[in-house]
Image (cartoon, rainbow, N blue to C red):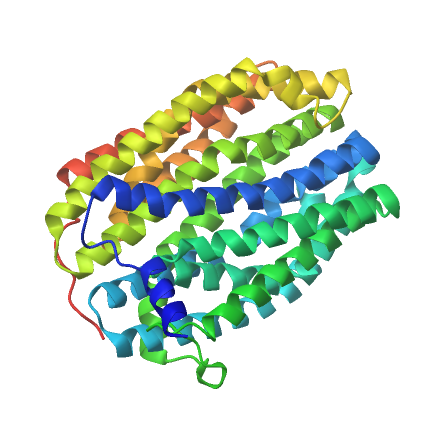
Length: 456
């Protein structure tokens, strides 16, 4: 037993000492692999649906993504807020604060998950119809979205549990549980879609079950670990003062997620106007896109935890150096993967479908995304760094201006100047460039390293 406890303490070691780049990289790797695994089972849905059901079903699964993210974006923001708060308490070695924050965070996730379940099921058809989803895609899209929200509670609770583990520096656990969930999802996809011919319903049910698995495993660990973030089931309740602190930190990110998702919904509406083939090609590439963007977000999350712990410990010099290390990792990764994706674009797109028109649309997406991911790396890397200090409003404003407001203006005024779908795709790299410039200016001139007043 003593050996097990010692091993877990090593896995949960704080990042306030030692090599900065090693701390961030080693903490990022499990996050990257975890996000990759999560993206893998999302992508497996699309690959199996596209090959065994057809391109219209592929379009249905893909077009449901933006309204789903719109609805769950707030809960993801609260999970980020909880992670920052927990990381700061752990960094300051405040056992009582860590205990209260962990239990309050899980209580909030259960409440949000229940609300999202009801709302998601109720508004699915209305949202998809408002997005001008083509008739040949609509019914499958409604089915997928409703069934997805039947299991959204498991996803919300797992994301909060993973945020707690990541805040404690134990990101390997998140990776392990996502690995199990990914294997479960892919096996169930093959059983439900290829074997039982359940179509998009099978894909949604497989996702729900896999999310349940990761939720159970993460909660089981949190109730058994011998650390300051251990969970006792009967103590999972909302502490009003702590909930206020978590929501205060997480609210900007939650609002940011929802508003950016709204802009993505508008982009999806524009794509829908070009027909089912364009929707399927866009949906397929968005799955590939995740394998590039998610590692960037992982570096950003690692920076948030690293900065949260060091900021809580008063080590401002490590915070500054960590910002540059994060930027370097983001830029190098995005340049390398952008080149690889462009090199193998045809075989990658043919994993999803043999439909030549759908493949052509997917390859067109690559040309507008892959050369410019490094701009997104700068934007998200700096945003994650600043969030770790608890100052979540400035990154929120930058991301809202660039990834939402700018995109809305582009769709309204610039899109009519283009004859084809190219105008829709161009909004991504241009908005990334706007965000990167704004985030660099804030990191340079903003007063984000000033310690905040303690509230607990």
